[in-house]
Length: 469
Image (cartoon, rainbow, N blue to C red):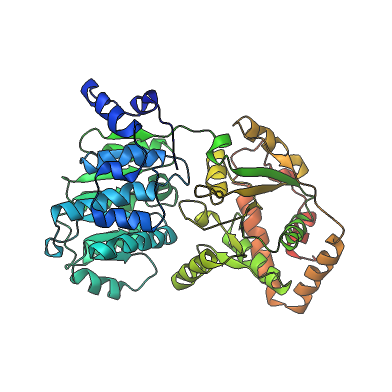
């Protein structure tokens, strides 16, 4: 991916002494390929083998500063190539220092979700095999005993979720982290959103203070600023990519569908059947909705993969890779899939439930139009009284066009769904759980002027869940 970077783009990101700026201009703005960094031959080989040639914007400015040992706070849009931005300097550090496993773990990477940690692990695995570094995965829900055994043999790179990392730091005597050189916190804002603030603070207390710290966050919230104050000893360099929603996914066709309260799910079924030969991700507001709609869709002969926080670890990982490998498939998910995960060649992002804010809207649609030439589409389902959400997005420089829905088969599908509840009694409880989870989630929308629970007709809404009474 080639960018025509301008000098003022870079200087706006950093508060550096003037003698640094000519150097930046010469080496960061003039060149756009990985070769400019004089990386090891093995790393260059892997980069080319994976068809990475040109630098993205975040890579062109963050890689040299990480290689030079600076502490960094990075902020970039989704799909910007952030993982490679911290992976390549990490691999090069181990190569340049000729790091020995007997010294303990050199690099710890913290990810907010298990899926993102697994994805990062396999990217590191691909790059590490040719260098023959030792790497390990520490995530909640997996077998801690096997993790402990691997740690005892020595790890150069540890990729972790916060809770499991803290557990190993406190209880695993074989975990040699006292020579830690680099700490990377990926999706830091997401780590805080899902409740890992205390864990991260305790991790920072236990690990060495003298180290290089890299922190990436899509947003710069008050919580992130507070975390920054305790994470960095010296003032870090801020690498920011300022962007608008409208150009964050400029290859994504963005639209909306207005549905009645009693036929939202029917609209989804109709849409999926019409585009059966495409790859879709459908976002719901709760785990129980994902579970219920997955079951109903399968009974209606729509093969669906589900991904949410209530699944067993092995199932989540298996489904993640199953969807990645699929050519034409449907994934029903909560926002656990909205951040960082790189699903190949997704055609459609369907937002069955609107996100809570515009930033989450960006992350959701960022699951499509990934890569250099990849294009995709997104559609959001809204009720007539939620039409103000379109104006809200328009104020954020997003303009959506309307999709018209064929309603001719709605009555047929509604009849089938109602009969399913009668035929399969176990669905009734799952349907009710999903219904109440939906209502609870709806009440949590911050924009009450648009998403007001008092506007919901519970009798009509219940028909989406096949509830007769």
